[in-house]
Figure 1 (cartoon, rainbow, N blue to C red):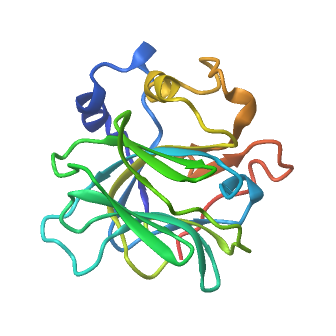
Figure 2 (cartoon, rainbow, N blue to C red; figure 1 turned 90 degrees about the horizontal axis):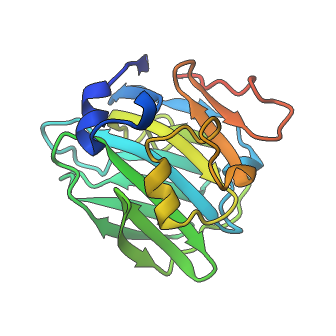
Length: 224
């Protein structure tokens, strides 16, 4: 079962003292569990936007696959899946029928802030506020079956480690703001793009809150 933990040490190591004591909400996965949320338009990035989260992989021996941190998919179609390479030396992005790799050192045992921008002509990936690569991939619009955290589809490419502070924005958040608010509460600290926030995690209660949706509070993830 997915565990709720207060992994303050890893987060403080990642970026020093948190602003005003804020630490992102966090979930830990053991490589056998997953969390799934109902499909929602708030998870769609096909028209552009930004997705961000914190992550730290936790496996000793490299698996024979690249673990997937999160995936928005339906049927045989993948809107986007973001994974960590099995050797923890980069990120994997799958979008539609394509995939790309973004080098990054994720083998230091710390939490790292990941951001993905969908632009008009492709995607940009940032790690800890710094761009690590661009790609001509575009996230397609699909009929989604759900958003999985900790796996590709609830059964395959399972992830072991911690995920925290998941947010989705309906616009591209500029780099300076991403860095400033990685350790701030988007709502209570008056994020300048707050009107563009479409989804935000509350992992302390196992939820992702959907903004401007009547089902807010009813979208709890269920571990199969």
